[in-house]
Amino acid sequence: MKADSHIKKCKQCGEWTDGSRNTCSFCGAELDSQYKKEIQRRIDRGDPTVPLIQVNEDDPLWMKIAKRPIQVAQLIFYAILAFLVYLTTIFAH
Ligand SMILES: [Zn+2]
Image (cartoon, rainbow, N blue to C red):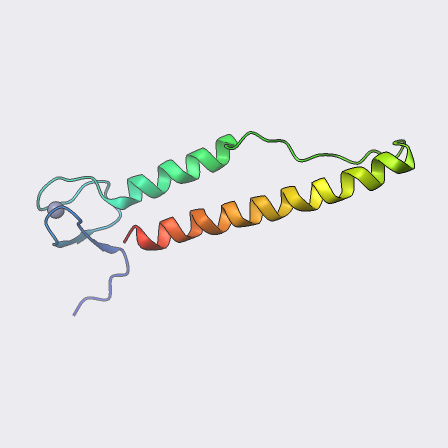
């Protein structure tokens, strides 16, 4: 058996094909590498486009206090989002 970690199972025909290619060598269907690339492209592009709140050094104290929980909430939101993207790439196999 050839030790090739790059083979992927085609969702279209169920055959194991060369995963370094974008299409199945058996039926020509697009492989999920394409799907993963699309997700990566969306992450790179910055979707969702909600910018992380910045706490400035010259902000008044009350604003720093008010911004902190928002910042934490945003970080948690991004962590959940990253986790969901991670899950979708796992189950895309
Ligand atoms: Zn196929």
